Length: 476
Image (cartoon, rainbow, N blue to C red; front, side):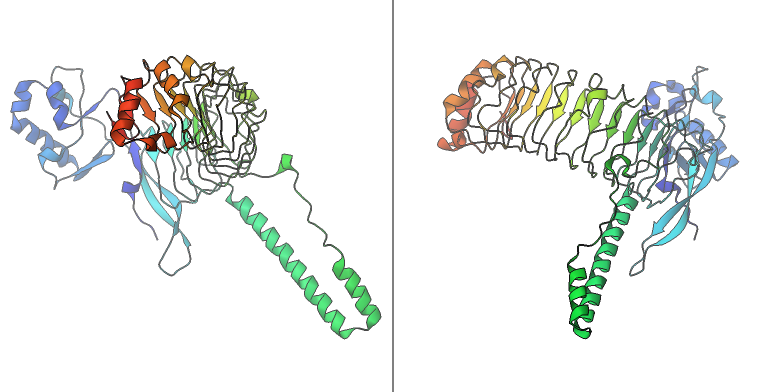
């Protein structure tokens, strides 16, 4: 079944020689005489529609049923004083491509089908989100394609050569099925092993009931023997779903979040890569980042990491943002080599102390340590003079004295909500020391909040920090 779904594919084309303007913005580029002449617009509209009943302009189509005021895009040229004197513009060329998709009918099993998508050959950006597509279409006609969004589809392998998109710089494959076949193979192997074990047990049981004592003894000895385990795949050669992908060498941004990837690999040749997103996968180790000397942002939240280790060493000098929230990390060891970090997120891990891992990260501006097991004073923060956001919420803190906050002269936001602070004397000196810079404080959920009325609570904090703009969720 073939369907035309041009609306599902959003293509954006950019042409500096013929900029687009909406009617609301014509006043800034058109002479008053032209704007006052409704007949001129009517003539333009008629001349456009006379050549074709439906003419695509960029990603917008006009039909003869549309009134004049619904023309949203008119290509203008600034080579003359009057923008409308050079209205004749070449029509954007379009191409129809076929996309293999999965159809989900009511009560029926999923079926493979094809869908036809119309693309603008001059487009630099293409969005093919949520088509249930299993393969990429042929982009050979789109010679200027740089940004490709293929979110929420069923892609298992990306191949830039087969899809003819070698010059893409931004690739978004959020929520696909890359690495899914690895999980399926592993599950099938476990099921086969369980079935073989069950068959062996049943055969042994029947033999015991029908054979003589000698045969029964032999059967008993064989049944107690452990099954021969399947050969394990070495960690260094374990497939991850990335090993079969062919990436464009020009990639600058790559988003592989919400897939089924078990291991970072096969990206070392992406020397231009600056941002890598691998959120919500099955990754257990930070590794194989050699060659990514320009990597600026790395996001590995919601994976299966238990430590940082030395996997960040190849990108230690270039890395500015590191997001490792929602893992099982117990130590910050390994972060100390990233001395150019500006943003670090370790939310929802298993940290019980900060240690001295952040002492050399003096360029940090944002630090997120909420939802861990920090208790006492989080030592090791005294060198972070450039910090303007510090999130220590939902820990077990009882004091801030001695943690180094008093030296954070640029600190604007301090999140302390849902800790175990019982005594005002453990936080008031910090508030007073940073009164000149603090603008936002979250303190709710601590015992000190419940020791007085809401008005007294606000007044006490405000007395320490007169320039405070926000306390908890309330703007002052």
